Amino acid sequence: MKTFLAWRNLVHNRVRTLVAVAGVTFAVVLIFMQLGFFGAVETTATVVYSALDFDLCIRSKDYLHFADSRSFPDARLKQAQGIAGVKSVSPFYVGIRLWRNPQPNKGEEYGVMVMGCRPQDPLFLREDIQQTAREVLVKEDVVLIDSLTRKEFGPKNGSRFGDEDIGVVTEVMHRKVRVGGHFRLGTGFASNGAVLMTDRGYVRVSPGQSLSHVCLGLIKLEEGADADDVAARMRAALPGGRNPDVEVLTREEVLAVERNRWVGRTSFGLIFQLGVGVALFVGTAIVYQVLSADVTSLMPEYATLKAMGYANSYLMKVILQQAVVLSLLGFLPGWGLAQVLYYVTSEGAGIPIQMTRQSLLLVLVLSVVMCVLSGFGAARKTLNADPAELF
Image (cartoon, rainbow, N blue to C red):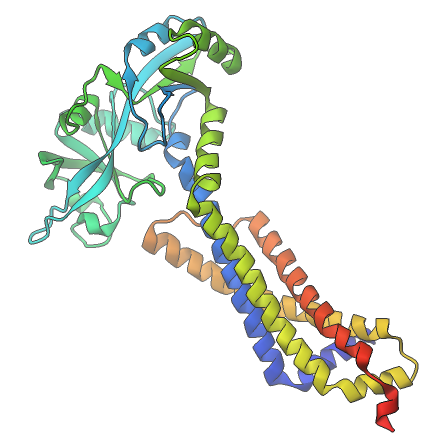
């Protein structure tokens, strides 16, 4: 009976109900998008680290983020190689360099993330990237380009780098390079494009850089070795005392620190968190206005119910049920629209935005909470419904 009355109230003025559903849908889509972007920040913060195969990482004490790792003497890698439990140590180079758009009549330069490694070192977890690097990166002037690199970098088809770009000649830091192949990985928010070169190729396009100073030291451990234990012994063995020039982190620590930086210490995470709050506020305001107007228009009916002996608690329950129904009616189309926008954003902008089960449940809960809060605010008006005013 209660649910039936709540539903009758909603269909009594269908235009007003459609406005409320549209408001909830708008808020739901906005929440989905903000959570999606927030999740993308977490994902892209470690997108390259997650693709690399390492147990420990040595990096400069002045390290800022992956694309700006600074450098340290390669002697530290040789010292780390002698620590018990270490299987292999590989140098890795990374930095932002200028890429020239190779298309005719273009020539604009954009900052690209250049990664350098020894192709024979098994650095990547994905065999497709590792095999392509091993087979293609045989010369210093050859690069592999990330197919997720933005279109302003000059793919031949004007949209995405692929097989048709193999053999294209352009410049990185005004040094000629040739595209030898491509891979698909992503770069995060530090850059809109990425290329992979040999270590010597990286030095070639990096003025002032030498092989004797590396950006990252990627360490694989012997099977059964404890990462925390080896890391502790490595920190003690490397020179520097209380003022070391490097730091040693486990894989888990590297990923956690990188996520914390992009999510908690930059504006990206804060902006998207605030976006969720704004979406909730907007949705709550819209639903409140609609329910409040509905309560006002039906005030004589509510007064009649009170004259018949129905308590205020019953009237509030009816309005809260209306609010819950509105949240569900608005959630379903919002979910569908968000999925479309996720796909468009992911394909068009190259942002790895995905809808997870956790975000789906979270938005559903937030939608219900948003509408229930609006319902509480609107239901307070029924307390003023006076049966005596009917006579």
